[in-house]
Amino acid sequence: MLDEIDRKILRNLQRDGRMTNQALAEAVHVSPAACFDRVKRLKSNGYILGTMAVLDPEKLDRALLIFVEVLLDRTTDDVFEAFGRSVQRQPEILECHMVAGGFDYLIKARVKDMAAYRQFLGDVLVSLPGVRETRTYAVLEEVKNTMELPV
Image (cartoon, rainbow, N blue to C red; front, side):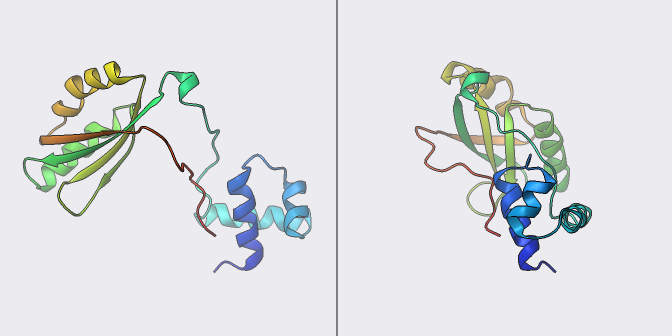
């Protein structure tokens, strides 16, 4: 169970995962040793999954963000498994979620531009196992983009 100090630690680390233990301890008002032990426990208990740098997609030629609805031709375990394995191998696909509703998967991907997306659609998306239909939504403006969870 998380207490308020654990929650403060998680909030601070979400904002700056490179924060020193000393700075984190000061921010949450505990000793550095206690802070270190708490962070270690939060990691071992799976609350902290990792730390990563947030990169600028435009500077890395991935300016176009797209969402794609995917409808499969069959919803059987073998098709789900084959589709999932294929998605894992595609670096342009950042997220893929099986969803309930009018389609089977929602994909979030980043590519250079619309020409790159057309090629990605033709070479990758429509050739994924079981794909019957796709609907694409190109993002015009990112209003909010965060991985920070309310803690």
